[in-house]
Length: 240
Image (cartoon, rainbow, N blue to C red):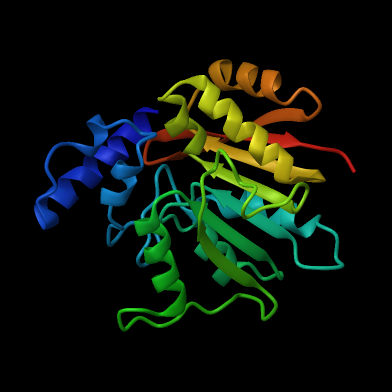
């Protein structure tokens, strides 16, 4: 969580310098949509036009690509990024994954979703994004991660990604974080994987995940350090 607060503090300084946004974003409630509507994509952070908490696609690909290779070969594996914001996870998977993949990024901020759709389609004079495989697809939709029913049916995704979304919701209380976990597991296929990326210590996160996903296997991998900070990938996996 310290890494997230630091990222938001730096973003607020840049936003204040360029857009005269009053106050500190880092002092806001992380579960408040108005915060994320104010947070711009910062040039020079990750891929062009994207802004990442913690780290971006390049740092995560070593974990993601093997999981996608294990997916059934009948159709491109479906990937859901909950609380995608303007992160490079979705765009990185779409443009750099050598295997076909069907990616959906959802966020409750209409500003973030509009920004990412513009980036995908080549708005504002930019070049549209090109897929790393001809069969790959990428979509962005506005949705509440606590209720994914309008955009995601049960068991429909092979891989679900959560980079800091649990962390943000937990600031408003653990019930919201547990509801997020429940929705992620609902849309996950029986043999699929949920990955939560965080800087929260395993002694804190693992008991929560084990309590909220009792019929699933929970494990953790250490990532980094990136920028001097050690992160963790919390994996919740089912069996075929």
